[in-house]
Image (cartoon, rainbow, N blue to C red; front, top):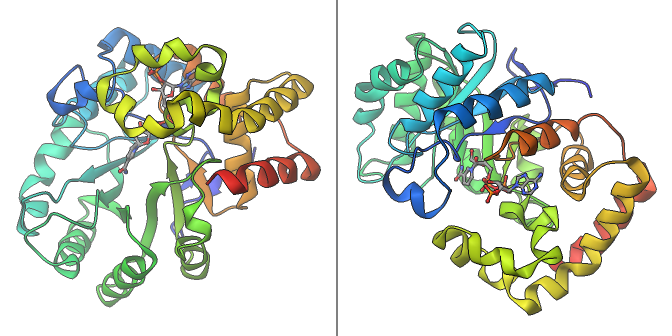
Length: 324
Ligand SMILES: NC(=O)c1ccc[n+]([C@@H]2O[C@H](COP(=O)([O-])OP(=O)(O)OC[C@H]3O[C@@H](n4cnc5c(N)ncnc54)[C@H](OP(=O)(O)O)[C@@H]3O)[C@@H](O)[C@H]2O)c1
């Protein structure tokens, strides 16, 4: 599948990237959200993504307080990838901090990333900072002008907040490259809340996080509901209504259709879900599935290697619409 352009920048990325929230080494609150996987597995996951044609990686300071950035950098080194050879995105968490922290902490972000340039630096969420959103964006723009980061993005921003971000950055001579938001077959809010239309109008890429709805769209809990018990506690809580017997019964017809389509193409339901996501919205949406095993990363990358036809995409559209 053809590479996509990140917003209106000069950066080309594969339609599927790798989400690196799974790389936290069991640190901080992350251990309640993801299982602890060691460096060896992280390197194998990154290697499987690269082998499958993934060209970019999304991490964040918040994923283990820099641990994910460090593990990603180590994995890339162990895979023989030199700084600049792949695209790296990371995020600044605003919680309890002023905009001044953006400039003060960039050195440690770059250090954790072991020499890999930051192609996309994102404000992790619109809330929680002691400074205004414009002040945060001006600090981000200053980093770009100083050559510390290549491009600026945001995450979890509403349509109105995207407009604001775009305007403030434009005044600084910087473009808003991306907004990272939750989008998947069971979570299509961007179609109703103006985020998709705004992204298209402003030429901003939407980076779809939790594209498998935390694993629910793989069908593994439909096959064996007992597997819900193996999930880290916060994943059980966040996915609660979808993971009950009633929730799983509600999404079962969609998952059954994904399995049928998967059989017809020789792929898995997860690959069907990801392929739908990166094609249904045209060029605007790219996805960053997370993986805690190399086989999952290989499967995610494989979602770029086949095509659902129009009728197949329409069927998924129709079955998922009432569920979102
Ligand atoms: N900006 C934000 O606020 C924000 C928020 C959340 C996530 N994110 C980003 O988005 C990325 C992905 O989101 P996510 O991890 O929440 O959800 P996701 O990609 O929907 O689900 C990932 C999980 O699904 C399971 N999985 C993946 N492939 C599978 C397969 N082929 N078969 C069976 N199970 C499979 C794995 O669970 P197990 O590990 O349990 O096997 C994996 O950890 C994160 O890594 C992070 O970079 C960003």
